[in-house]
Structures are given as structure tokens and as C-alpha cells.
Length: 180
Image (cartoon, rainbow, N blue to C red):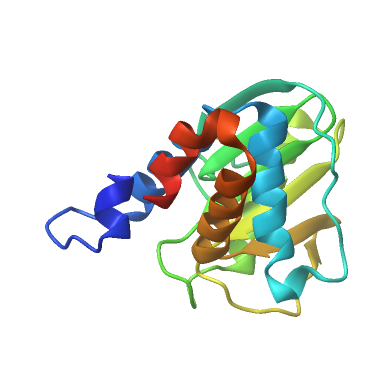
């Protein structure tokens, strides 16, 4: 799947969910500190994030899930709120909202609903970081509900994996899945 995307094959059925699962399923094969460093590098490479910093140490990975269905209380959603990826480390949590294209589809109202739903599920017990992946829009929004918002381009994620590939021979076969 990832190689087909890399070589711009048009016969595959490309959608946001298949791209998200293909990339993150592969990243989750790596040790937690390594895939976190790739994600951090990708986020730092996006100019809108210069005023805030993501943590360097993650602690231990407790769990991750794709498309969790969270309690929609205090949002306008009726059944549930569904971020694309949720990662729980011992030190903090990360919610990722992914969009297929690089411009125009992210929505701060959706981010707010996901943050409210996260708090419905987990309260305020941990620091939460929110990553808007792809579909970038309003650069002025730095936080929502006191949660830092970080932007990331899919291309920056690929570049960060590629740079890690050249520096880390131990996991190069896994990283080659990402960079083609």
C-alpha cells in the first residue's frame, strides 16, 4: 500500500483511513522512542510549530488505537466523537486528526470536539498533545481548550522517516516500508 502511494499508482483506492493506518501501523512496529522521534521531527519541520515544543521522552507506550469512539457529551455529535489515532504513553497522551490532502480540510471545531470527548473519557489526568496531520488550515490557532495544537505535513513525516533510515541501520527494513 505505501509503495503504491509512493509510486503514485492510481489504481489503488486511496482514502484518509487507509493512508493513516498504513503509515501508523508501520511506525508502531518501531520502538516507541524511535517512532516518537520521527513524529517529533516531522512536527518540528512544519513552520507553524516554532512557538511550542513537543516532549522528547515518551516513557512507555501503554496503548494505541485507531478511530476510538468517545463519549460525545458537551459536543454537537449525537453518537460518538472519533479521532483518527489515539496514543497513550506513560508520560502524556496524543490525539491525531489526519486528513488526506495537505491543504484546507482541518477544522478547529472538530479538534475542539475531540478534545472535549478525550476529557469525557480520560479527564484531565494527563497532558494531551494534538497533532493535525495533513489538511492544514488556520496557522493562528496554537491551542484549543488549553491543549497545544501541532501541525504536520504527510511529506514531513516521510522526510523524517527517510532521515532516520539513513541514520538507523537497525530498523531500516521497517523504515523502508514508509519511504519506498
